Image 1 (cartoon, rainbow, N blue to C red):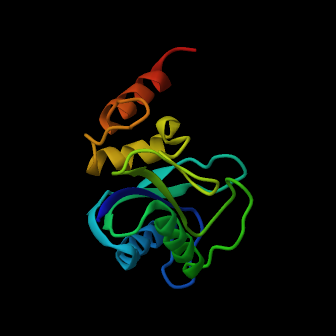
Image 2 (cartoon, one colour):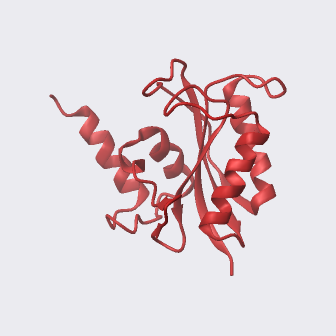
Amino acid sequence: MSSTFLVALGSNRRHHLYGLPRDVVHAAMEELSALGTVTARSPVISSAPMGAARRRFANAAALIESEYDPESMLAGLKWLESEFGRRGSRRWGDRVLDLDIVLWSGGVWRSRALTIPHQSFRERGFVLTPASAIAPDWRDPVSGQNVRQLKARLTRKATLPR
């Protein structure tokens, strides 16, 4: 049985073959086809670093139709990260490639290794902006809001006076 995954992509380090982070993200979007059929790719955006990271990120999102279950998809994404040269890095540090499962057509998934929906995606414009370009009507199974509504809520929150 086929499932759809919304995957977030990010990079803020050059790659020896692909070059700048934006080009790394474009290359990774093509390589996702090793895990299933990529049915949509968002534009690549630029975002500010978080946590320990020092460089700006290139971010995007992709929809993948796959026969994989969530844990197998996670293993495939980790394999792809390592193929791009990612090694163990500190949380929110600089990285060649970061791939995260944000949403899954099966709804909620919880295991020791993986939680779907991604725990922080509702507060991350660098995830919601690309996701809203390719899956604006996809509903978050936890909040009941769709990606477009979550993005609008986050945008309003960011513009409120403090």
